[in-house]
Amino acid sequence: MMGLLDSKEDNLKSKLSFAKEAVSMLLSGEIKPESNLYTDMVEKLYSILRELLEAGIIEALDAYELVVMLRCRFSSLPESGEILRNLKEALGGVEVGSSQD
Image (cartoon, rainbow, N blue to C red):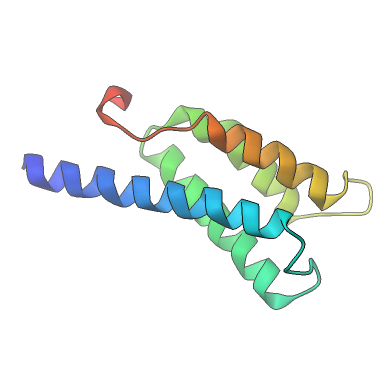
């Protein structure tokens, strides 16, 4: 049973690591906001952060709210770059570990 919990925790850690790298990649400007890849990456970020919240990692809430804003960008919202910078900062405070129990 413990191995299963460790495996789930490792999976969440891996996804969190991917999310952090994806935000850095989006911030780099190499992927344009109007591209399908950008949209796909934002959707993946949304999925990962939702999964973290469902796993009880409440520290992911701020990042989740930011990715929701990014996901439904309207002209009245701040530029996506600002949202991404805030998202990167919010993800910095999210950790997956046995202390989350």
